Image (cartoon, rainbow, N blue to C red; front, side, top):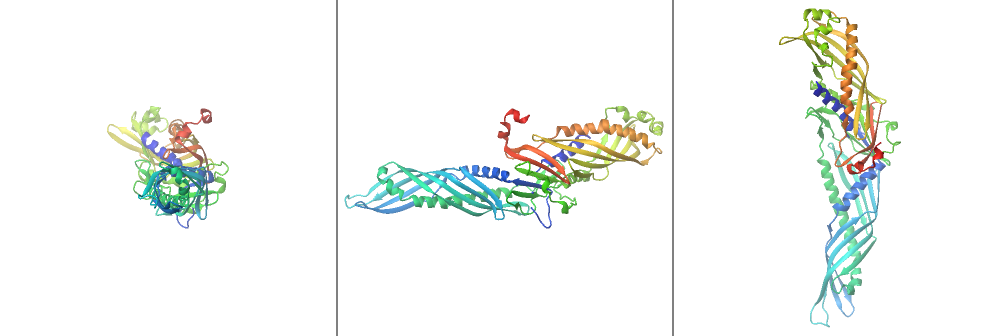
Length: 494
């Protein structure tokens, strides 16, 4: 019993820790709104990655001939031209109808190259040549790109719409040979080197975007959560871009492994009200879950017959002997004196789950079959139907989501009996005491331990907040690297 309840409760809480657009047909049950600060965070990650992944970048060989007085025609070749480092000092990101626009300005780049020259002159009977190396400093490098983000067959499709690069200034320093004589000549290569950089960088960025898109295509469309349930993480609808955010939607429903969720969702109420957003909290991301996510989780466990428990051990073990019931159900004790018992609990229809302001209401319909253990035989003697109404409160602390359950009400009725009618009022009093002193403390102990929201490729939520209202649960949070969070001063965690 403990294992089954534990798995379901953790699955129930896991829905909070998962990771959002508009369509005429499909609607997602899990949504993510990435604010401008969140986009800026992603942009910084992208720029940081680009600084290392774009280099080393080799440029084509450049040749040029020039006529030098007295000397004559000089043939010069620049080879092994390589961009060694790129450093970005300023960048911006904006989203809108045209896509996601990233602008880089004031960047610098360091290049290395080899040079050589040769010429023939009537002054000497042999060809004259020299060679050496050079370093190149690029200043005021500007890069602009526009990205398109679409949903194709449940995956995100990233495309590069436009990309341009402009070099403001280049300085060349030669080493080796008689380089000091030819610095002025090599300065004439500045335009060609600048053009080579302006041509090569966009090509390299395009290749990088293709690789990033290929990575997006490999993301799973179904994530196993337990041995029974999987979460559908296919994207639905195209991302919605505005001046203040990027909105993504995923299906977000639980289903039995390798099966499609059969839950019928209420699509006309799928959009989150502005009042539920995280704009006031000024957070990077808002992760929103519709109550249908929780309903689908409970449905999976119900259909898998996992909402069924045998209670054969309780703190007051006298409750599982007919002697403990002799004043409540006398005929039970009379027919089966001093016999051990167990309680066979089964949820007979999927729990009804509704998300309201700062709480989740759950109504659980339960059949309790009283079994008498007579030698090696298990004898069902009666069945009591119970409908339990509870309120679940969830909270988030650090990266752990925990909760607690409160009993609101419950009703009971005798479904069938092999030992005659019962005094249901006495049984209801006993059941109320059992729920409050045994069942709910056990469940709350499990919920209090919570579930840790996993980090994602070295990044995790920072200072998250949780709110719920009108069918939606929303987590507002910043994002930071795991190392950054761990290195925060201790007083920030108080």
